Amino acid sequence: MIYLILFIEFFKIGMFSFGGGLAMLPLMQEVVFKYSWLTEGEFLDVIAISQVTPGPIAINTATFVGHKVGG
Image: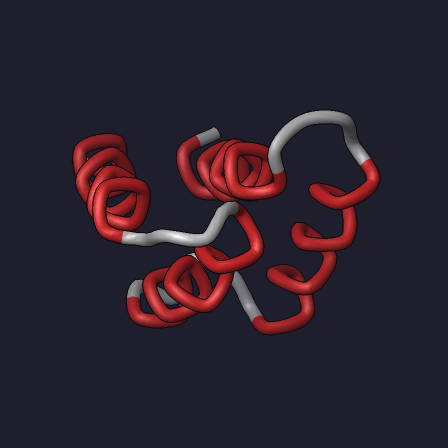
């Protein structure tokens, strides 16, 4: 069930946000805190790691959140 919730929430973020990966981060933060998937410190760590790794920031952040929540 957690995989379906992850998919739906990140699909909505990707579908309705404009401006690139950095514009998606506040929406991701809202969803992550709404479901209590990560703490504020963990989310900041995820953002920092996403900026360092190659690739789009939004995709890296979604991947790290999904890995942390879903395993």
